[in-house]
Amino acid sequence: MNNRAPYRVLAAATALLALGAGAGCSTGDSAGADPKKVDVVAAFYPLQFLSERIGGDAVRVTNLAKPGAEPHDLELNPSQVGQVSDAELIVYLKGFQPAVDDAVAQNGGDRAFDVTSVQPLLDASAGGHNHEGEEEGHAEEGGGKDPHVWLDPTRLAGIGDQLAQRLGAADPDHAADYTTRAAALRADLTALDGEFKTGLATCQRREIVTSHAAFGYLADRYQLDQVGITGLSPDVEPSPQRLAHVIEEAKEHQATTIFFETLVSPKVAETIAGQVGAKTAVLDPIEGLAAGSDGDYLSVMRTNLQTLKTALSCS
Image (cartoon, rainbow, N blue to C red):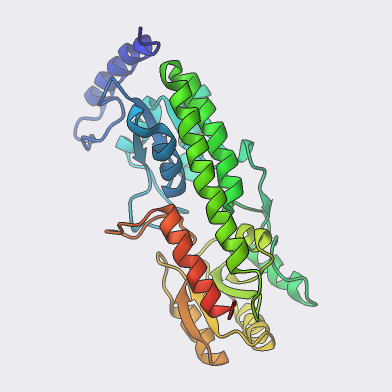
């Protein structure tokens, strides 16, 4: 007996009403397309990765943030709002994407799974410097909480375990399968954590100068010092004072590499690199995959590890 059958009828009726009210909005990707699968809406890529790995062939996952798009400032079209309304489980990170927060508040109900309820967020400055003058730099960044929790594989594993429970509650017939797949993912993430610990254990430098302050969890986990050119939002222009401060930090710690990321412009990082005689390299916060990428969370994290080992002269 399908425990979700009554919901399917309601979802189908709601979808028909939505079509009548907003014809032309549908993309063909709306939730509810396959009555045999749990419809999961993921707010952005790392949560899509978790949902697909743990859900397997029992779920149908829709990512609200498209490949190649920067997810912080995501705006939802009417079709995507409908996907949130129709989903059986909405996996999101409260405070990261205001448009998603609004849609969940209006339409999510008890179907929403906020991953911050599993892993409380660190302060935005966590993992960074505490040198004299650094407080002023962080004040410019706006403080608050750092949402990039997925960059610590052990924290991501904890979120995965809870996601398996939520999927099992929505789909009791496959609860054991979700738990099994979450355990397999935890094993993969534990192995990845071990690779990072070993790879970054002995390095000539431990400071990472990044285009925005996305790497606090990675820095906290592996005893690195993050110097963010901008704060949590990658599209905020740093002030001249902040640029001068970062250049001073980079020179002080003899940084050989200034990191930028795949989904934002490298211009500011290139400017600082020119000032300190360093090169630039990509350090990916994995907020989303680049368009056309055939990688996944695990492969991109391993690429990040190799980049860090080279930049920090790790042995």
